[in-house]
Length: 222
Image (tube, rainbow, N blue to C red):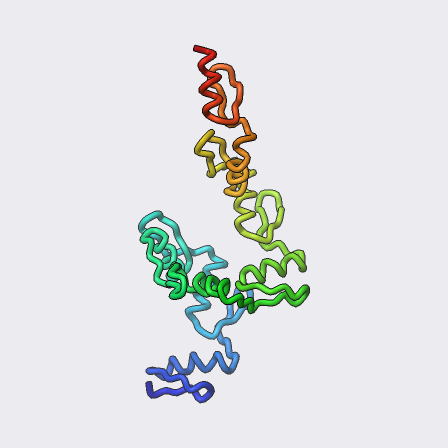
């Protein structure tokens, strides 16, 4: 690798790669997005960024049809189908399908929390939790419902909320068939199953807290 960076000594096989690398040290970002003004030091990064404006998702999963804007996202997604987990924790044996999950996992063992909130000094092991927490201070709710304008700090909460408009209830209780818009509501329902009268008599509609009580009751009809 004959082309050496004068700042850090890293070597490159091509002069163009060195030119691109030196922009990291110099802060040079010559590729600017015409839509939002954000700049990048590599042209390919601008191409990927532009897809966030256009909505273009050229990469498609051959297994389920899921689409995404970046090839790396597709590679990670396909591991959900193959079960591949190439990033193992050597201390505990647990494996992960993305390297960032392994890094966060290891911080749980070491106790490392490198991200600190400047407002309350609370620390976090992951950057995403750190960013979400800061929105509590700023009041920012970047995930907005297109139907009613309600905002959320977490995208999963927006997805669950949107089901109140669409009526979708994809999480069903295997015991009684009752549907829920999100998994936490299903978990709470299952945990409270002994108090909820999930088991309905098809003859009279009376409800019971367990299937055995329902069977006993149904004998009264026969």
